[in-house]
Length: 314
View 1 (cartoon, rainbow, N blue to C red):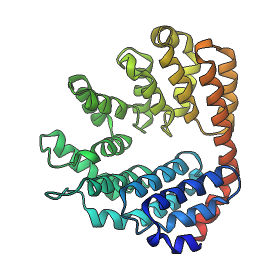
View 2 (cartoon, one colour; view 1 turned 120 degrees about the vertical axis):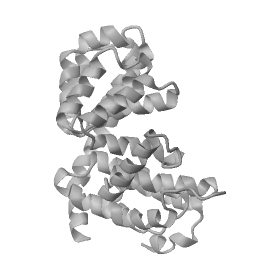
View 3 (cartoon, rainbow, N blue to C red; view 1 turned 135 degrees about the vertical axis):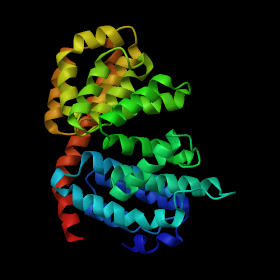
View 4 (tube, helix red, strand yellow; view 1 turned 90 degrees about the horizontal axis):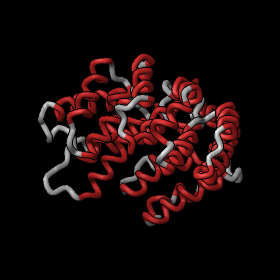
């Protein structure tokens, strides 16, 4: 509590270390998650982009792995309260001569509001600006905001948006944008569109080098993860033969992507699956993935109810 009150007097590196160390204590079971969230709340006035990046990264982990579905509205409201004043201060548009630190600050805040809080106003603004950008107005969306905006827009997109991004992927020459359009297809949360993305993952349209990233995005997608995990197990032999058999590094990365699954039943299923499909070239990745999943699942079960109680007390 004293450190929270003293945050403005701490150096940038000290504020980052405080967040990282407190989080390490939570993971080790030496600090309650509520105390960590109290600390996060103390960063409402933070302006340094590196500290904001650390903060949003921790919030994203909590959002993905620890928050119960019933608590998501309250969680989103907390993150919005925490970061909305920051976006009001930076705005969406870069100013002439604006330093890189300000651009990175804006990017961290938009990432937190659009992807963690899923704030409707922020996602709506991202959608409008992305559409203008796609139509040719390159000033509509600052470069550092592009990645988060594409993902946020894809999550709530319809079939027309899915088809449009798929066309952009097929026509894109720039490797960075081509990969961005592709991975956006795995972020759609409409069940029918998630099913289409799963078909893409198991087919030949996804380039070999993007196989593991596409699979990891699907496994991190709240809607797609269950059907994709089921299909992956059912069609594993064909998937492995077509995409992974001659690519040991990709095999290891796909094994590691299974760690995006969040519940204990997933841990049990992954353990059974990997035991039934042992690969010497993925032995270390298998052990590390299971160890990390055990730690993440234990943390989820230890903190989920406490997060809900903390949110209700706000």
